[in-house]
Each structure stands twice: as structure tokens, then as C-alpha cells.
Length: 101
Image (cartoon, rainbow, N blue to C red; front, side, top):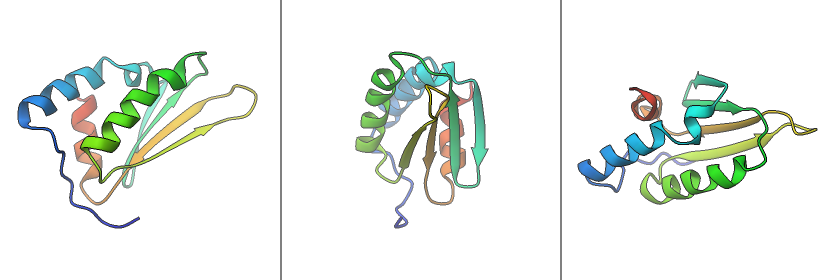
């Protein structure tokens, strides 16, 4: 992973709206939210439409916050799904601004 600056292409109003939307999105349904050394992990229980609801979030972030690396792991037998969003130094604080009330 190459180091990219932590920069969102949204203006301050767009970023504020995006953060507000993310706080009430499927991310709020995570069973566990854990801080990683370089990002945040959301853990979800299986739900039939989980991937369909995660896809627009992932696609949106890949466009506006190109420094983020995103990984999804789905456990066998319809087990938990983890979403890891990581990046360069400072990413944890950036991501925590998404989930802070």
C-alpha cells in the first residue's frame, strides 16, 4: 500500500453531510467496532442484504477518500462479516470522526 495524503475530495459541507449519513447507515448496525493500528474494523452478523447496503458506502469512499484501503471478510457458514477500513498514519482519527456523535 502506498502512502497517500489523508484528503477527502468533498468540500466541508459535503463531508459533514457524508459523516452524518454514515453515522445512520449500516455501519451503525455493527455488533463490534474496533480500533486497528491503522484504521477501524466493523463486525456485523449475517443479514441477507448486508453486502447490498455496504456496497454504496464502499463505492462512495473509494471515490472521495482515495487514501483508504478497504477489506471485507465473510466467515464461513453465513458467519460474521468484517469490514476493515485502513490507511496511512492519521486514518484512525479520520475514521473515528465518522462514528463520533
